[in-house]
Image 1 (cartoon, rainbow, N blue to C red):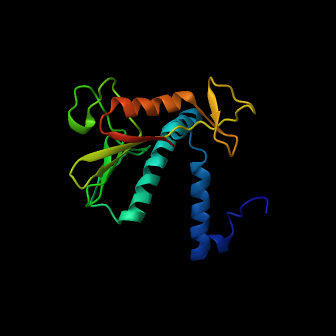
Image 2: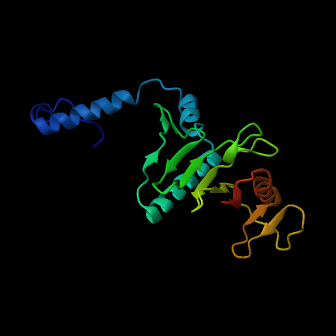
Image 3: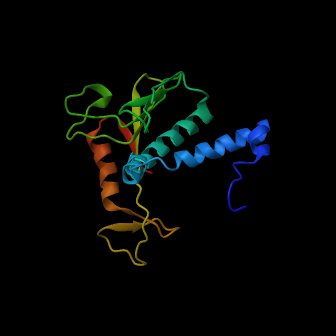
Length: 195
């Protein structure tokens, strides 16, 4: 068919055909609305960068895995949503009845007290898992999402990269240094992992 037979009595009179014709005309009319494609593309694609989306994916994956082990949480923070994006606020937390908590982008500062205190710099790990021990003291485990997929040289030197031994993918020494910073500067942190 090279054109739509708009004058066809069957298309105009039969209810089902008439509805399909109405939808077809509405689609054609909407395709002709003036849309700034650069603006739409930047709003849709530039809302979250890939690293932020990876951080969120890691957070929700950890929450889902803990939920599979511990059951449903008793409390969860809310996501911020508008007509363009969904975002997680800093400090968004999911809590279970035994005190276990998984939090997103928790801030640690020198001025903070207790578990959120940093002995040096302001630090903000992507994911913090808080485990309440039998003595009532909490230990923290931090996970930082690093979206760095790169091929390393066959013979890595001791400066920038290391091999993981299996896939040829590497990590950067700065990632490991950041994990040491978490362990050294945050007194409640018991372990730090790169995701």
